[in-house]
Length: 116
Image 1 (spheres, rainbow, N blue to C red):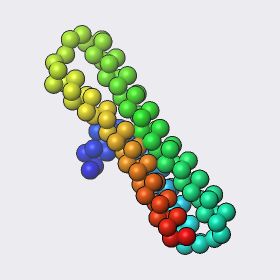
Image 2: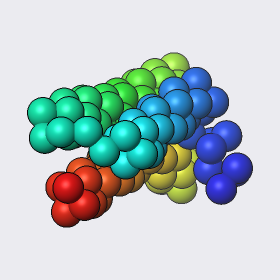
Image 3: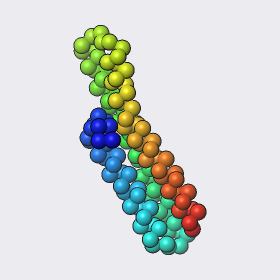
Image 4: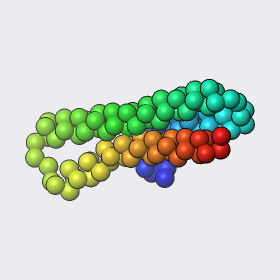
């Protein structure tokens, strides 16, 4: 896991991890507080914003990675397909993490709605 974290780039993977932790913290706080329905709706909306931010930031990280990879390919000239495939594979790490954060948001919001 640490290897994937480092391959995805410490900046984007670190930001995505902070987003995931804030999503989990919001969920835990809401479970412990057990407020009214208005408070539940606000918490779910906040979690939705955090989850969407994780998704978009993951895709943005992938686009920056692809741009960097294609810039290097352009400057070097021809490269082997294996190197290109390896670069494309690495660029997908942040997107997968962002999508995972969004899936976690969906699960947590379903749990909140069910618990309430």
